Amino acid sequence: MKTKLYILTSLLFSISFLLNGQSNAIFDTYGESFDIAGINNYKVEKESLLNNPQDDTKLEGQILSTCPMKGCWMKMSVERDTILVRFKDYGFFVPKSGAEGKSAIINGKLSVDTLSVAQLRHYAEDAGKSKDEVSKIVKPEITISFLADGVVINK
Image 1 (spheres, rainbow, N blue to C red):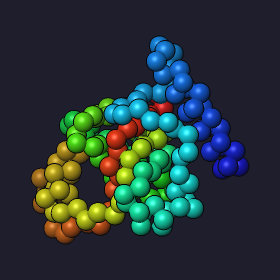
Image 2 (image 1 turned 180 degrees about the horizontal axis):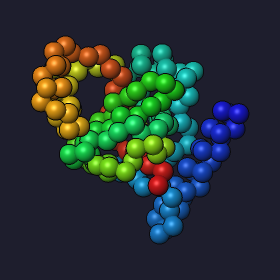
Image 3 (image 1 turned 90 degrees about the vertical axis):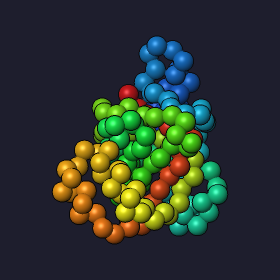
């Protein structure tokens, strides 16, 4: 059943991507354009993808949240992993709200990163956390990160 849903979703992404220049497009694109065909199977390829951070990667997942201050980052759920997505050279942003729960395809580089306490506090402040919650962040965090050069979000 998951395979059929994956194929259907990919087909819809492909068709709508072709229509993106028209007013009835069902996807919004951000950053560089990219061919959405060839989405990596994260469930099967995860280890290989993480061991080759220089390789281009395309992943599909569900948006959990976006930066409410600028839209300069988002968190996505991909096969039960939460991935922090940032945007290459701060060259583009995604919507600050309203994208939660939507399906997206991201293109770029996948890696494992250590986020410093300062970075984690910055993201927490961006997300509107209280000063008390921010002050409780005292340890760096290892996370799966994605540096996207392009994003396609289902409307």
